[in-house]
Length: 87
Image (cartoon, rainbow, N blue to C red; front, side, top):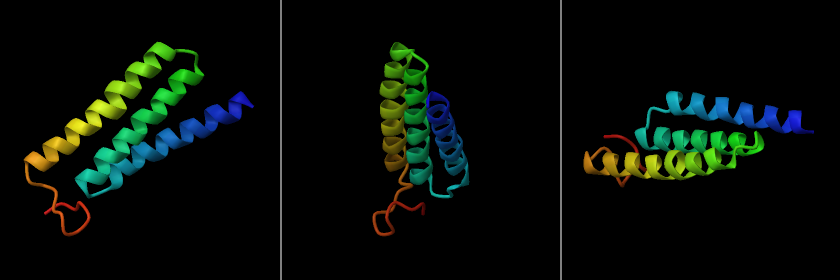
């Protein structure tokens, strides 16, 4: 059962990483990186490293994603008319 859970989380990590590279929209890529980091935090928790999982979830998934979104807004890369697309 645990091997199946590990496999599912690893597949999610690979998919999130792929979509972070594949998306042309920077906002979507930033959100995919947040999902990647959240899946990494889940994997760390499964591997019985809860302190690393908490740090990855707080810094990697939450803080980094917010900083990316703030930076995109500050650079004027996000247009409000097309759902967050790049100019």
